[in-house]
Image (cartoon, rainbow, N blue to C red; front, top):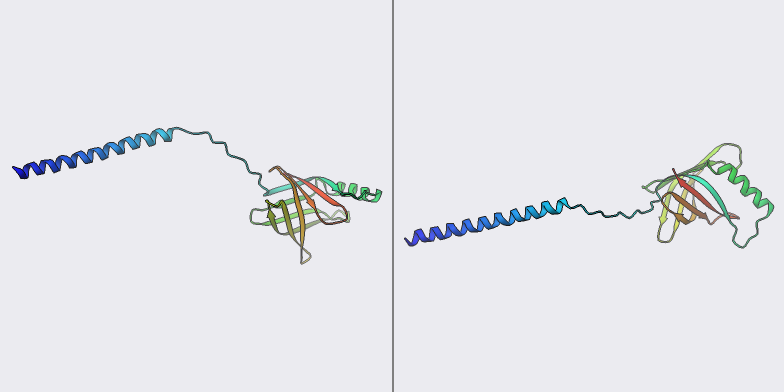
Length: 169
C-alpha cells in the first residue's frame, strides 16, 4: 500500500510539474504572439553617407583676405564654364575614388584621377590620394557640407582656395 501511495504521489507530482511547465510555455507562447503582433514605429535616423556618384554643380572661390584680381575672376569664370556639369566624382565604400573632369587646358579632352581616399568625418577632412601619370599626389579637402545629397569640399591648395559643390546623382 505504501508503495502504491508513493507511486501515485510521484506520478501525481510528475503530472503536476509537467502540466505546470506546459501551462507556462503556453502562456509564454501567447505573450510572444501578442508582442510579435505589436509593431513599433521606430524612426530610423538617416545618416548622410558620403559614398556615391556626384556631379559638380558649383565652384565657389574662397580667397580669404586676398582680393581677387580681374585675372583671378576671369580664371574662375572660365573654370566654372569648363567644369560645372561636366565633372563627376565617385566615392566608393571600399575607399577608392575616381574623378573625371575636363582638362584644365580647355582643349576639350577629359582627365581622370583614380586612387584611394582617407575620410575623417570627425575632423571633417577628405584626402584624395590621386594617381596621375604614375605618381601619387594627396589632394586635401575640408568637408564644408555633407547632407547625403549635397557634398561641398574646400581645397587647401592653389593660389585661390575653392569650394567644390557636388550633387549626388
